[in-house]
Amino acid sequence: MNHSSERIYLYPVWIRIWHMTNALLCLVLIITGLSIQFSNPGTVVKFNAAVTLHNIAGILLTLSYTGFFLGNLFTPNGAYYVIPVKGFFIRLTKQFLYYTIGIFKKEHAPFPINEESKFNPLQQVTYVVLMYGFVPFVILSGWGLLYPEITVNSFFGFSGLDLTDLLHIGSGFAISIIMCVHIYFCTIGKTPTSNFKSMINGYHESH
Ligand code: HEM
Image 1 (cartoon, protein in one colour):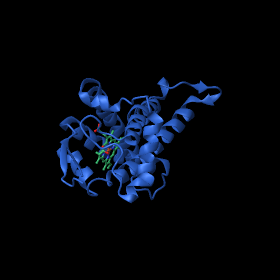
Image 2 (cartoon, protein in one colour):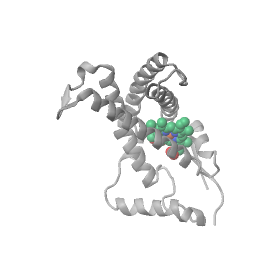
Image 3 (cartoon, helix red, strand yellow):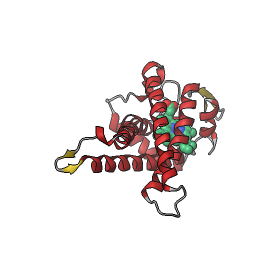
Image 4 (spheres, helix red, strand yellow):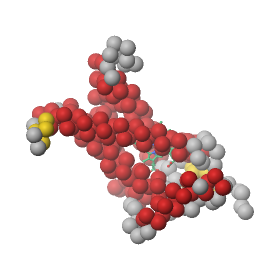
């Protein structure tokens, strides 16, 4: 068995800058978002300040997301987000079985990380759903709430604004949960901190 560690450059500078900005903005949005939702005189951030901060962070997130979207459109990084259809469920099941059983038996990862495949199948699906589903959705619904005049008035008899609000809170909640799971999974690297270091220096360390 080969125990020598390998370092591969996987995270270009723009991804690292985008990711750091995105993570910070998401944290601010989650804290201020919860403060707005559960507002009472004792919340972490006062209501008016929370609304202002939430709006500013939301506008900045729109800009940083545009950067991510264009970066993935015009650089090779976008290729990691294209899911091959053939054998999709088999690959997902293999990865799932590894995370639930194999990893505890110290088996080798079924999809080792390299330049051709930066993400394992579960990671890839999560990142695609997150970055091309929930994140654009939370941004668009956020703009709909910021400018209610552009939001549909009613949808099958329901208030358009209430529905937009529900979708905004729902997708924000989904992103928060995914972020917690994401951070947990990032600790399953060569060492508990090695994946976090990768996002700072750009190099992934494998066993
Ligand atoms: C404090 C919060 C966060 C921490 C500590 C963190 C940590 C990390 C680390 C260590 C990686 C590299 C390892 C890997 O690919 O799994 C990574 C990648 C990634 N993270 Fe996060 N993350 C955070 C928040 C977020 C949020 C809020 C999002 C999206 C809404 C996000 C989306 C991504 C994506 C899409 C990648 C892959 C980027 C690429 O290489 O193309 N992360 N994160």
